[in-house]
Amino acid sequence: MRRILTLFFFCLTSLLYAQCPAENKAFKAGERLTYDLYFNWKFVWVKAGTAYYTTRAAIYNGKEGLRTDLISLSNKRCSAVFPMKDTIMAYTTTDLVPLYYRKGASEGGRYTVDQVWYSYPNNKIKLKQSYLNAKGKLSEYAAERSDCVYDMASMLSLARSFNGEVYSKKKGQRFTFNLASGHDVKEEILEYNGRKNWKANDGVTYRCLIYTLIDDEDEKKERKLLTFYITDDDNHLPVRIDFYLKFGTAKAFLTKSENLRNPQTSIVKKK
Image (cartoon, rainbow, N blue to C red; front, side):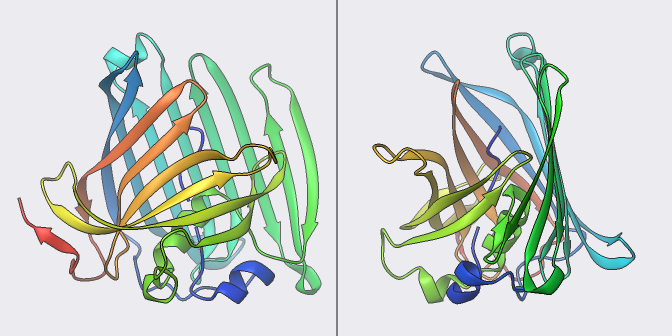
């Protein structure tokens, strides 16, 4: 689960050219989401664990904001082969400007930590980054940008604040943005893949918007990082995420949602 989650802004100009706030109408503090995790193991899909995604009110450096946590845990069956515990935590302002990001990944006996600190002096974006590799070596980096920079957690929050009616018109439409980790900043692509009805593991069929995150660092070949389904309503609830990992493929299916902000008008069929 190294590329959890994804991714845009209510204004395309803001997304591409300035670190600007986003109006959040999609979710609120107190929202809790639960997912089943599946791995593709030798051509067989196996239930591998559970993921929890929560949002709560928080204070960061004396300012009111939001804290999001995404925790992925493997079950006993999966842990015997590939033990995994990934924790992603991020702070943003109430209008979703990134402040801090941390990912601790314990996968297959390896443990790594990515961290990113954001500051915004003189209309610039300054990043302080650190990366602890699996051998325990800590490396520190710094970067400065004039256009938007996000991490996996803040991108997911932005994706949910995005006005799909503005941009989700043409299948194949693409957007670009900067993605930060503990050791680099890459330009990535987000591609809109249309609408589709999909039945989640909570037994409900939703009308969804589908997007794919693409890495084009290799000029000769693009590489999919993940595909995600969000509900086509004001919640933009992530109900399915497909991860394309180095060691295989993983999927996360929604099983439970609590304390949603808006009516679920994307429901096609209830359980």
